[in-house]
Image (cartoon, rainbow, N blue to C red; front, top):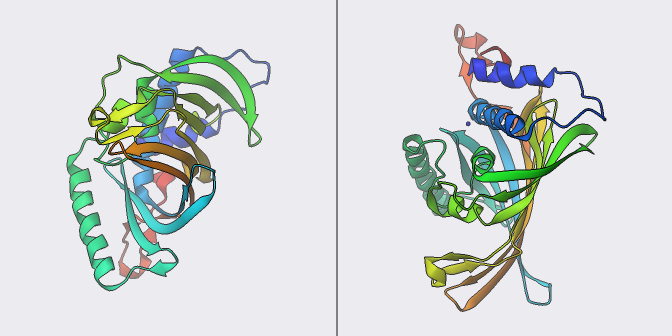
Length: 278
């Protein structure tokens, strides 16, 4: 989260750019198209791997950074779920026992991902964009240009009566924000969300995510019109075990996208599969 899905994704990119004064499409119809395309994208991207570089800064009550940690991961998708394998932490490559532990962790996560439906997040993972589209109501449509491309912009708020699975989806009911839809590609180009209320885990005994926690997410056509995540940024505010306050600023940059499915033709003629022709 092949061939028909890939063709549908890439064919949409070839559509003519809409006029700036064209009427905004019907919201429910557009959202169904975006949802369908996003789910198709999530299937096609399982052919790809990429690198993500993350920085986590702990922040005190005065806004000063008290601690910084970095991590570089090799990322890929299994059955619609993102799998992140750490290869470097705080500037040092994983080796020895740490590398063995990470291999064991990732192996178990892959096995679990294979058994978990694509529309249900793995434990501890964030909700996918396509699932978020299922849970939210949208309003206030308008046209804007984002990164030089025509987009349709909506404000949104989580539906309180939406059926959800797990903590990540339950928390999404308390989100509000804005998303930018690339009209030619029918893909989510940019997403900004924040919590409009506290979200309590275990009735607040385990943790409470504070109002104001926010997150930004970007996708872009990175190769032959294929849309993949390119980065994210967020501020996390929480109280843990009713005692410790946690304030973190988190950034991620995604890059070095590669096709990793290989088709073999007479040994030495092995070549990387072209996702547009599968």
